[in-house]
Image (cartoon, rainbow, N blue to C red):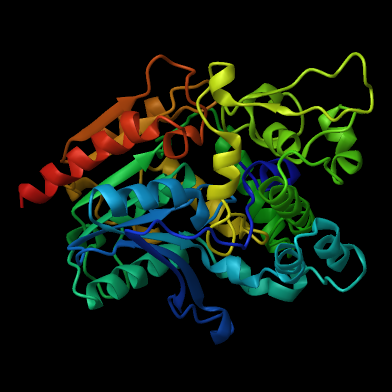
Length: 446
């Protein structure tokens, strides 16, 4: 799932922040990342969207890694819930590329309340997106660098006195979590020794694929990296567009979208749209045949008014059409932190995770030395939809480790799309509560 316009429109978020609940505190931290030797020191940093219960100190924490092209705000809903209901800290991670982004215009839009005001920063020539040649050091930001970054997050939490740590993620983030558990960081201590369990949301390494197609794609990415294409050069502009779409949906969901006319070639809708309708189209599976990246079952586009062609088409809420996720609630949740889109996602990470996945994480030359001895308890939640082969991958993964993998497939199939396990309106019942019970059992068994 390369970051492209469709993916950005689907999952990108804003830089404004909702107030935390009275009993849940929230902050955004920048912390030192691993000192990757080819990177300018000022760019070895990470962002953390942290949640914790106010009423008493947490004794356990969960580190959550976002999916492909995503960011920490993907976990706002579950982060708040776990802090409030399970009494743990949640450290949702923005990968190191997020701090390269320029949010001047989006910040202006949020401060002024006018999307166009912020948008003009990007359209008027002030915005200077990075070019691959500006950040050639991204070719060194592969899987090992990102796993070393996770090790730094582990150290930061341990330094605060919290020793019981869970690691998890969504999609690509789940794969990275699996990789970390098999990894040997620079200090030589097997990474899984510092964890209590793994949490996988609709993601898994898939194991060997003999058809050669994955190897071909990995080789193509590596050739591009060698030629200096260290990230998708179209991504920053696409991310800006998606940021503005989300800002508009959050500020004025029922207002007429000023952006819709500029993306008619994607939406295939020529009539006016509300801001929420445009956001809904960007994330909903109803539009999987367009250039969007369908991630959620979040409602449907309202019918046009036959008596008024100029009336904007709105968005029908999920609970009015038998779907799973509240689009407006999702837009607001995705506003936490600094943003949930990677404008400059390193291609090296995708190439490396492909190689590691093919090898089922038994790849010593990449530092993945401990897969066969990995004995952490694992829990996985599958959206159980077509297009992702995570179920078969989890079977192969479970056979490669000593411990038990507790796999929950959301039933009936198709009720959840890829992002829904961490954002659906009923996820607290179907996902979060079973997760809490599992975590409680793991901690009680120590």
